[in-house]
Length: 519
Image (cartoon, rainbow, N blue to C red; front, side):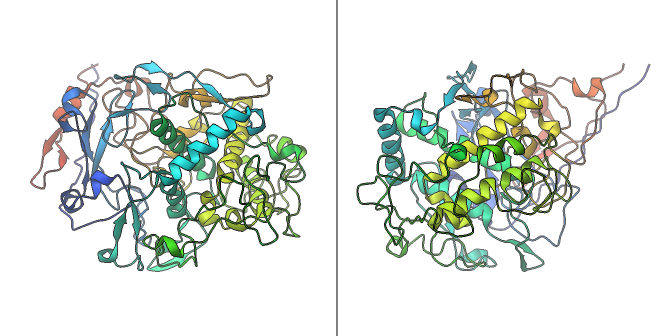
């Protein structure tokens, strides 16, 4: 008989000093910050544990940890919290009080009808006005769940402060925060950020759209709401840059007074100091107003073409080395817009990047670009192109490449979202997440979801404790595991037995011998 021994490595959980982040409001209390724990109560217990929704579990320092990167966002959320909620099954949310994207109901056991995101010109007049009204409501409604972080000195955490922000400005802030220059050896490295110039570009923005879509659904009670997109591939100029849609502009780039967005302020606008976070957040009167100058840039005076889109879809490999703006024959790099789609090699400003440059004004300043609602329509179309690619090549999480770029590794969490979603987990057909797109190419039918019907947005190796052990204990390089290991079943009660409370009030793993017995 062969004895299969699975060693559970001790997860070291240490008492640490005060740590800060842009995170759920409830996790910015003095106690949560002091303990380094983001495990809010739901239904009377941490992470809804008494309701069998989740557990408060610790993080460990990954094997690929690099001390020269002292950026607080790296290996999210370890730089801030040493314990967070781990939700079971189809439960989700930072307190396990919600459902995974693609599920709903009190027990999160109802699959969401994957309604289509439609082209904005497909919407009726009433539907279009409703969408703009939802955005306006999100712009003025304070988020009850989240706060934002601002400081004049990123190196001094004692200067960090939390502020209320509207739901839309939280959305804008998340993009801004991910774009801030990476800190390496106490200096700034602008060659990479957490949402662009690497494999995570596509999946990062997919998750941002999912987050905002649900925020709007929760705000309005409209569960059937889906974000629209703008298919710019058949337009040489922006045909929705008028007051019937996203607003006209004057010679100075100001949005027309008849537009829904004429008076919108740009969150975190002003000079983009490398060593600061959103310095104007506490001073709304200092924020700039929304600007656009479509077609005014002589280097970007027309939109990407239909042919550019089709050429981009010809690259079957998701991304290639060196996994940055120099990658060639890479679907990600062609879609992001650093190479010429027709040959996949020549450096060229195209696709995603070209649209930002063409519109000009606020959206061309990448860090604050999400403050322009046109950002949503643009990135929804980028996601539709991604969806076509996923269906065309039957892509799955395994299509996401192994790499060690900060924030872009397949099993790093998408920064700065809680609960954790691995980058690779977002490479799946959109119906898994509860939506689809209008006018998808019928020659590219949806395949079955690649991960047994739903995805695994978790922090323990790509699968959910309580469902399967899988790679839970590895968190290292990706490997192929034997079937007996992959299929090892776990349940919440036996998983909870692994953990006990340590002296700091955190979860700590105990060391077990055989968890599987003899075979």
